[in-house]
Image 1 (cartoon, protein in one colour):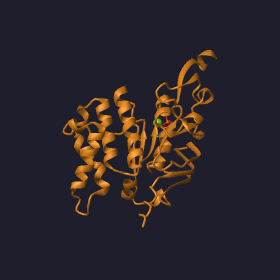
Image 2 (tube, helix red, strand yellow):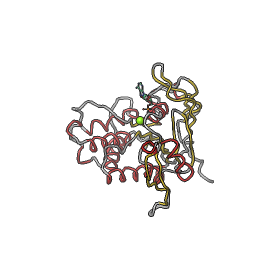
Image 3 (spheres, protein in one colour):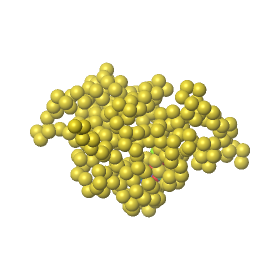
Image 4 (cartoon, helix red, strand yellow):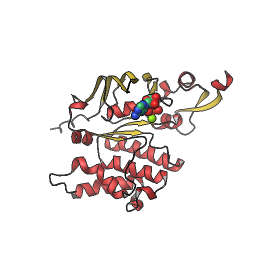
Length: 272
Ligand SMILES: Nc1ncnc2c1ncn2[C@@H]1O[C@H](COP(=O)(O)OP(=O)(O)O)[C@@H](O)[C@H]1O
Ligand SMILES: [Mg+2]
């Protein structure tokens, strides 16, 4: 007898999503169905709606039209802890009380899972230790957040998202404050979560060469709409760079991975 297939991974999916702030409409009918167990990278210029889209998938920003669906139900209909057991969202500029220590921050990732008496169990301790090791913040466990460098603090927040131990991880520019070694370490870690644990990842990255190198799929947003969606080779073309980012570039194969790699040749706006 063969074992039954595992239940489908709980992945939030966007269908014709409209969202905005006040009178401003930011997303204008966006579809995004992340592939389970794969790494999807969202790219787009500043203000194109990447963070807003990620936050609708994590139920932080409500939809005004269309739907975000999680496990067959509208995400708005799920109880909060049930969403938090399925989806971890690391926002672009997370804020926490400065006096908080790293261990206390990471512990918050276990809150959706704690038992009826609110006590952390051994499994929670293991998940926290695992997340702190993966994010490289073991040695910072007892330090206060406001005593850390920008990169150290960012890794503490990443540990929080990992400790939540969800089938889906949504990461908004997680590499911004990291030096290049830590950027690569983080992207490799995220890649391993997909490959080894089947975690579904949607990550916003500004570095298109890193997106090309680590993503299975790239989705480009421009003015609140998806303008390209496919493999790095299909999406990251000189035409897209010109139209969406206003940059002239040549694309050559990355000498290490063979994926597309950009070399900017000039700035169209300067030429205009
Ligand atoms: N909390 C907010 N209140 C009002 N406007 C916002 C808010 N967050 C984002 N915006 C606006 O929505 C647009 C899209 O923002 P965002 O989704 O953050 O884009 P991106 O992440 O691609 O840079 C921007 O014009 C931004 O000014
Ligand atoms: Mg953003």
